[in-house]
Length: 514
RNA sequence: GGCGAGGUAGCUCAGUUGGUUAGAGCACAGGACUCAUAAGCCUGGGGUCGGCGGUUCGACUCCGCCCCUCGCUACCA
Image 1 (cartoon, rainbow, N blue to C red):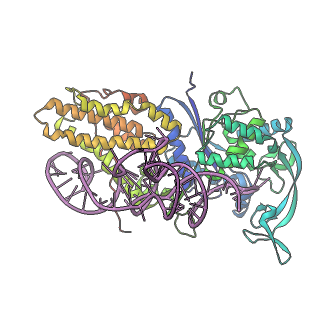
Image 2: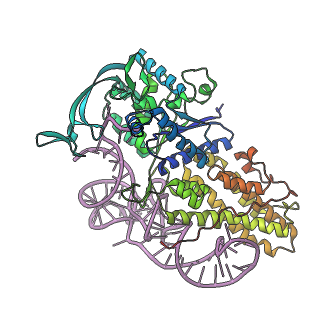
């Protein structure tokens, strides 16, 4: 019995700055998987949100002369707005400042305390006030009698601060054992190797509280401490399911999470600390953590000083949302860093969306309009050429599911766009404009083409929901009830029904001279 | 420094256990067609598969050395 429930999450974003391409990418990727699973009949819970505690937020709020909570309300909203702008199908949006989250974190804390995994001690280290960071012994050097950071050159001082610790050191073998038994817990494989070598290098206990600032969730029974970042932030994945209420419908249905989509920069926290916390609290760890790469602009990390920032909102304004979504899914090799540039986006939109898929829809609809009275043809008879192209969908349903289960996003898109290439070739080879004396053949070619549009559009729904829906509406189909399985049916479009062309799907981008 | 990944056409990448002329898409050039967003289809150019050496009848594929790029190497997230 396969449980047809699917819980997928994005990272919760730290709202100290406005959303950038990396946020958009994580969210879009997660949305594609969420939509695909729904299309395949799963009950999906798709979570995103904001991580709002910590010193940086407290400071930023101070600078704006605002209460931290009010400050967060404003910034968090820009991320909530982003979910609309990106057309995310998220079922929930969690904020770490919410009551349900505080409740969950404090419960988890008490649980860890009761199991003796948390103890009070002192955090000691070289701290740089200007860098807001602790440095290890070997990152420190001496200059003019003062200790400085090798990296930043800023002065460091020896600091001792009372702190609660989590006994991470006890989990080295348990984690290695867990990775062994769950060989695809961490993907892609290259990242998994990094994590394993990190854990093999030995684990120290983890400081999980701070006294030096107050904007956070209080440690139960000790108001002087707030619970520090990861134990707070990661727990959002549980609190959205109403943990600690184990009997809650959401928790029972959706935990353990199927997939945490994250950027490679926060892999360790998700792949080491998170399962350790959960194992310590007798909660099953998630099934999978996928650490994707970064989106680079001109092969470089985007930064203000380089002036190479590509703002997702601006890209959406210039090219359209589905266009950006398609580019990110198709052209960025999932798991690796990927490049984005106006030129590449324009090429991709034109060749795949406008000239290929979009134009195939248009040529088919226009032809049916003129030669089939705008109706879905009825007098049809498939021959082997027709069945060959139609079967290229039904024969591959298993493969399609497996690709998405392994997060092989690029291969999934490649599979679909190949069908679109084949469709254009089919249309060319069959040349319905030469079949005006053989109405039955002409009708069949058009019917097959319409079926191909339906199948391709269904497969594209997760990636470009608006555009694919538009194509399906042109076929007068109730898109709400369409399921992945229907791709295997070759006779789903109702003969004699009226076609309702919604118009050009993707405008061609005129190339600019840059 | 240590551990790991990778260097294949202008660009992004595929290349299964070593086997005949190294593939795809984009970009570029030519051809026939005309239903379509001058889109689509067909054909083509272009690569000493990072370098050197070795094993083998035969290596992009195995081994050794070297060069280059990137990631990880704990409490900013």
